[in-house]
Length: 270
Image 1: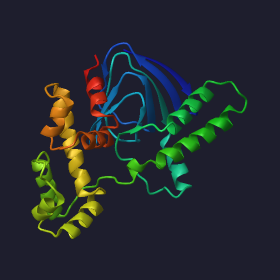
Image 2: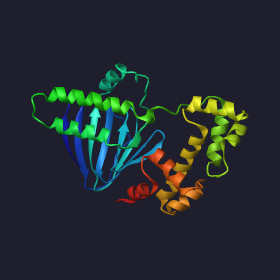
Image 3: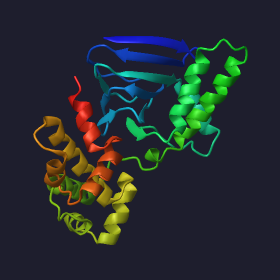
Image 4: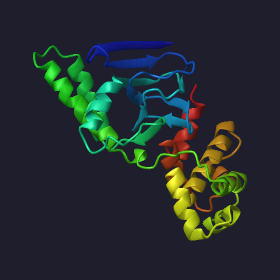
């Protein structure tokens, strides 16, 4: 069960604090506005385009407008959600050099202290009775959207590869991602291209380097092993093609926003 308290920011934007007294799994949904959430306790899992991500204290989650997702909230979760009207986001983006950015998937990002701090200020201002509340709220919303648009996660967004040679390499990567010897040269060979031209074409089509793509596949495979509870973090790392625990942890955090041990703890709560 969810207990929530909502404060309006405007006619179409609001701040909501919530806590869960029992596990909750919602139906697939898509928000009209952009949702920013952070947790003080517990964990939340979001399934959407690109797979599942886990949010926990120390990170924040961004759910873009119109992106369908399923949310699972654990018992004991406490957090805050800021939902901003999509038109507000577009207006701020169009007034900056970041209008070409596109929010196209749910992401979890480790907090550097800036975005959650701004969100906290916005939440407190929303409940204040100050006469200049509307002016302050508008300024904080604008600053928050700018910081969200600047996130590196929007720099490289996956798009569908149409070149059959790249599709062949992608299929090969999925089939052999857990092979520690898989490298860019083998992917290029699967595509029938030189390594140089393959790397350029791959990055241009998918927005990410081939090696990073493989690391993401390995991290997701490791996550599936960890969710089943049958492998330790070390065992999952090596079974997924990683030969170094430090690199595994770094790749896992890039994909899921949390480290593997935090992921295990979050998926086993409740």
